[in-house]
Length: 136
Length: 387
Image 1 (cartoon, rainbow over the protein chains, first blue to last red):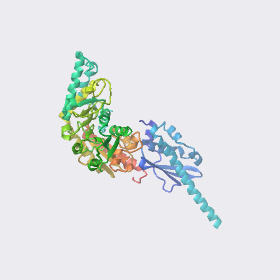
Image 2: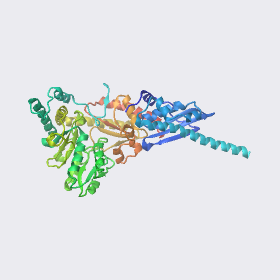
Image 3: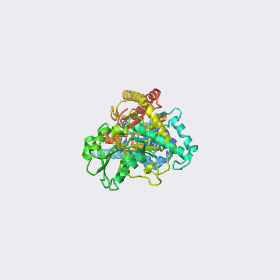
Image 4: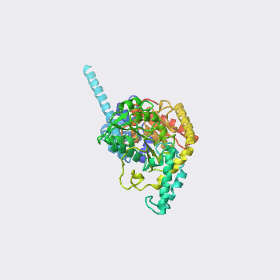
C-alpha cells in the first residue's frame, strides 16, 4: 500500500488542526473501535464557513482527508460545502488506496455533521428569537 | 536505505552475507536437479542432505524427520491439513489458540468448512495460553493441538512443554508454529515433546521462500502437494536447492551465534523499553514481562493510531510495525491484542519493535529522540483531549 505524495504532504503538515472554542457547528463522526474518529468545528458567518478546524484519531489517510476537506470547504457557502463529496477529497489528494476509501467518506460525513449541527443550533436560536419577538 | 534503522525483524530479516555466499553456486554452477543421476545432480543432492542435517541438529531431530517446504505458511498448511486428513477415521476435532498466525488460523478456519470442528483457546492478559481451557477442550474426537511457540506480535513464549504433556496424556498429536523462535531461543523437539514443528528461513537471517516441517517419526500424516517422489514422498516438487542450502547454513550459524545474539538484543530491547516508558506517558507494554522473545517490544500508545505513528517513524528512517487495522487489509485491529483483552481503540494504537542482529545502541537513541515528538504531535491532533 502506498500513499500519494499529496496524501503524505497533508499528513505530515495537516492544515487547520485544532478546535474552535465557541464553534457554530461541531460534527463528530467515526468510531475509535474501528480506528478512526473525526471532529470538525466550523464558524459560519452570513452562510459562509469562515473558519474550520479538525481533530482526528486515525491513520495517515484519515488525517490527510481531514486536512484536505477543511481546505476545500473553507470560505465556501454552506450550499457549496454540502456539494463536496468524498470523491472530490480523494481526487484532490491524487487518489487513496482502495482500503482507505472509507476515510474520505468520513471526511465528507464530518463536514455534513458539522453543518447539520450548525443548522440545528440556528433553528433553535431562530425559533427562540421568534418567540422572543412575539412575547415582546 | 543506507541510514535505515530496521526494527521489524519479526516480519523478516536481511539474509546473512555468509548465507548468500553459500547459496550462490547453486544458482548457476551447481544447478543440477537432485532427482537426476549424473554427478552434477549428485552434488545438489549432497548439498540438500547436508542442509537437512544442519536443520535437524538445530532442533535435536533426526535428518529424516525434516521436510523442506516453501516457507512457514506451506509448512503450517501441510502439518495441519496433513494430520486432519490422515486421521479422519479417528476424529474431526482440532484445537488451536486465538492468537495464532493467520497461516494457522485460516487453515483451521478452512478445515471447519470441510467437516472438522475447531476450538480456539483463549489467553490471559499476557498472551499466555489458558491451560485449563485447553485440557477441558480435549475430546475423544480431538486429533490435533496446534499452538504457536512464540507469538509474532507480542513475543510471548507459550508453555509448550506443559502443553505437550497435556497432549501426550490424551494421545493427541501436537503441532507448533515455531517460526518466531527457531534460531532465537533453544528449540529442542525432544525436550519440548513436539510431534510437528514449523520453521521459516527468512525469520532468522536465512533466505525467503524456504522453510521446513519437522515430522516426528511414526506420525501419520497426508501430503499436501502431490506429484513426484521428492522429500521421501512427503512434499512433491523439485527442491529449491539454493534456498535449502541457505537454510542449512543459517541453522549452522544459529547453533554457534544464537546465544550471544539473544543476550545483546535483549539488552537493547530492555533499554528501549525502559526509556520509552520514561519518556512517553500513557503507554502500555504488551506481552509477558519475562516469557517474551528477547527482541520484541510491543506497546499501545493511548489516544493515537498505529499507522500514523509508523508513517512518521518511516519519515525519520525507522521501520517498525503495528497491530492497527490500518496496517492490514482488514478493518479489525490485531486479533492477538484483542484476545489479550486489550480494547479495540487501544489495539489500534499499538506499535511493535522487533530488534535484531544489526541493531545498535545508536538505533535505540534515535528512536528515543524521534518517537516522543511524534507521539505528542499526533496527540495534539487527536480528539481524545490529550495535548
